[in-house]
Length: 150
Image (cartoon, rainbow, N blue to C red; front, side, top):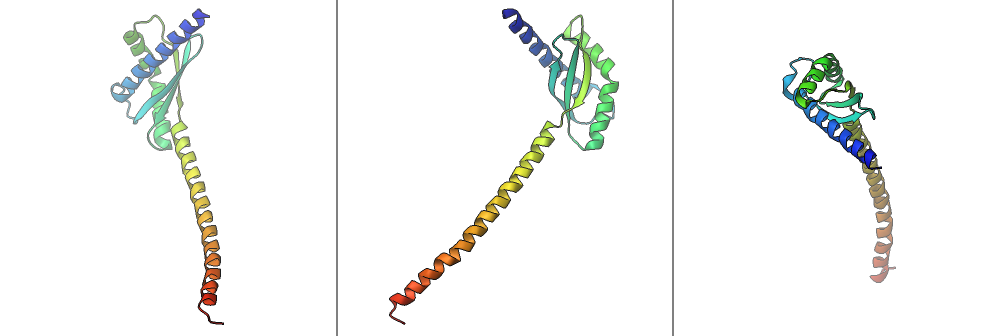
């Protein structure tokens, strides 16, 4: 059992190092004009450590996303060579870049939930407003009765 914990800890450390180093390269070292503002959201290492899935979140529209992914896929060899040099390891995993749309999906879900809440509040306030005049009408009749006029 301790062997599994140690292996998992090692993989987490390697994944974090990959995330930091590749993120630094994207921020300033890669000079490909296709790569727009992006950051590494997650690195998932294969259990054997031979390959890694790199999830990239791109700030921009669909065109910026596709251009950035093309640029990163073209720079894979350079990135791996730099990682080999920087990390001082014998082997750097094969890198596969994937687009991370989780933030955009989260924003869309929040928007839809907000709309649903607003419509529910409107319906609730409309229902309450419809009940309020009916509640005030009987009270005005009671005033007439109390004033002595019949």
